[in-house]
Image (cartoon, rainbow, N blue to C red; front, side, top):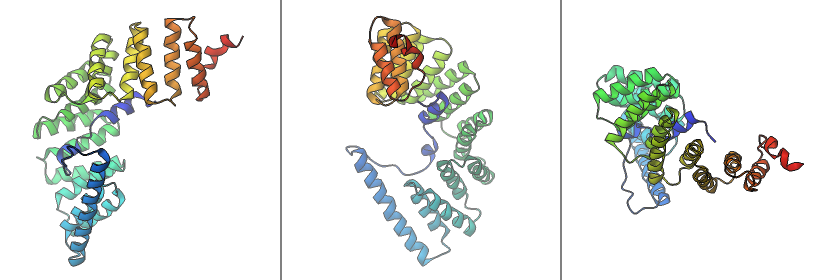
Length: 308
C-alpha cells in the first residue's frame, strides 16, 4: 500500500484543471466513449494546427495551441517542444510559460515547472493560476510553507477554490499542524462537499488527533461518495480496530480485500483483527497463511505457534 503522504497527494485534485483546459459534456457517455471522443478531438485539432504552422512557420499561437492539444492527450515531451518554439517566436506570450509549467508538472519536473510559473508571475502578478500551480509544485517538493504562501495568494487573487484550501490543509498536515489542517479542510467542505478525498484527508487528520468517532463520520462520507476507494476502507478499519469494534474492522478489511485480492498487507491486518476478536477462530491463521503465499515475511512469527 502507498504511504499516507503519497495517498494524500493522489487524492488531492490537481486544481490546475480549475484554471485551464477544455471541458466536455460527458453525460450519458461511458468513460471509454468519453476518452475516445477526447482523443479524436485533440488529434483533429493537432492536425489543424500543424496545417496552420506549415502555412506560417512563425505562427506562435499555432505552436502554442498544438502544444496544448498534445499535452491534453499525454504527449508531454512533444508539447514541450512546441511550447519552446512558441516562446522562441514570442518571448512575451505569458500563457505559454504557465502551460509549459503545467506540462512539466505532468512530467514530474517540478523544479523546472516552478521556473515557468515564476516567469508567468513576473509578467502577470495579478493572475491567480500561476500561484496555485507553483504552490502545487512546491508541495510536491516538500516546500510546504512556500506552498501555503502560494495557495493563499491564489485565494486572495482568484475565486474561493476548495482545492486551494484542501491543498493548504495537506501542507499543514505534513507540517504536523493537524488542527490547522482540519480548519482548512472545513473551509474546503463549506465550498464543495462532494469530493471524497477531502473527507478522507480530514478523517485521517481527526484520527491523528485522537478524535476517532469524528474520523469515522468523515470516512463514512468518503465511502458514500466513492465506494470503490480501497484506502478509505483500510483507514476506517484501522479506526474500528482502535475502538475495539473488531467485527466492523473485519468487514472493512474484507471490503478492501475484495478490491485488491493480491495485497498481502490486507490479509495481515485482517488476520490480526481476527486474532484479537477470537483467538480460537481459524480465520486469523488462514489470513496469515494467505499473506505468506503473497510474499509477506512478517507473518512468520504469527504462524510459528501453528507449526508445532
